[in-house]
Image 1 (spheres, helix red, strand yellow):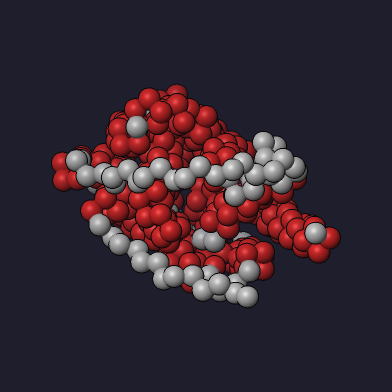
Image 2 (tube, rainbow, N blue to C red; image 1 turned 90 degrees about the horizontal axis):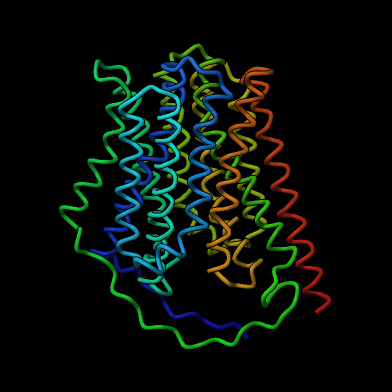
Length: 399
């Protein structure tokens, strides 16, 4: 007999809006520095491989955040940790704003990545805890709002890059947003929820207990592919757009805005679809949409078709991370804390390896050939989704 769940309301109070805005400030960092990479590379006269090291620096910071975050939260609490993360992220942006020197720009990307990830995961945990049963909906909406802000950031950076101010002026959006948030909402924070009743530990086995089984590690590998896909687009799509269409570097940065527009639409629709479709077919469909967008974008020499392809790619990519994270939680036997600790490590590794590999391939074979890495990652992610779903169904039938 099916059980009807009681309706769950999402109440957008002041603490909720604070965290939405904190995540929006994070979006100005991550998408601003991604859109700035081709312009920074041009200023530094760096190779694609060397420019890709900036993505690696962000990735190292993300991994460090995942390893050290539990200690910070235990020592300082979520509120102080989130504000320290926001301040450190702003310091990293100011470092990139202030200099062209490669060691310092790498440092700026790394510092912003470390502190930004600290703020991101702390705020997401606080938002989920604050809203209880509506936590998933709140996180989905927060990410959708952040994507819209990120889209505005990439478009604004492209516009500012074509003025006498130069593209670096757009990087000031992050520290300005941090200061305004501190002045207006600095004392706001979600009240702690009552501690839940103790739950008996799950039975030991390959899918529960103290150990993790094959589904957990396979879901982590799929998450790796999905994050590598997203960052390959955000860091290198503008480069391919320039190479294929002949657009200037500053103008081609708007390609990321098109990609982000698709992501924004997909994120707002994602909650509706996830409530009505099984996870595995939805995940496979999202990967298929990304592949269709790549087929439109990759061979195109016309700006209109290239932008359309990036929009379609964004629609598909928008669902990758939420579905991959949900699969990681399921593979951990529902232990969200274990999945939350593992996800930045998998994501950071993908941020380090994916864009750097694409940059090295671009130096060796050209950006167009290097973007063949995208369908390879899509195929690997699809294989992981299908294998996991098939083996889970087989195990369920046997049980």
